[in-house]
Picture (cartoon, helix red, strand yellow):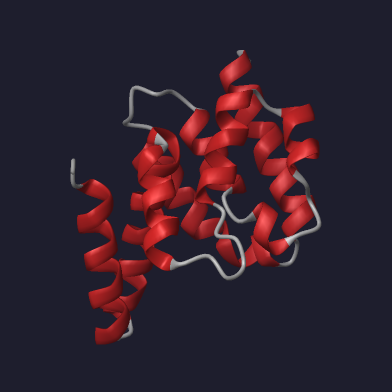
Amino acid sequence: MDFKHIKVAVATQFATMAKYPLFRTAVTKDALWERYLSAFPAGTNPIVVAYLHDILEDTACTVNVLAALFEDNIVHAIVAITRVQGEDKDDYLAKVRANRMARIVKIHDSLCNLRASVMRFDSKRIRKYTEQIAYLASES
């Protein structure tokens, strides 16, 4: 097993321990992310970020813990994709868009959420995620 696969395995195990039982309900979504993200040339780092994207919001995990486990670019992407309480939505999305790896993961997170919204016929969330994807995918 090479280092890239070890990072994904560590992220999966860490997410399972830290987010349980939340992680159990998100396994299918995370598997979709892994399938989507595996096509990107950035390697497995976006997959690691995908598994851990909510960890700072949903658990007591800190940036220091992540920094001890993963390289800086992964930690920076997780910090970028984490919405701080009270943070303006537009400021948050601009922060995500400024970090390439966070942007890739957030687009795929939004695609998964859009798919679920379509299945529930939730027009408000369909509009939200469609606009969010358009903004994150734009170059300006």
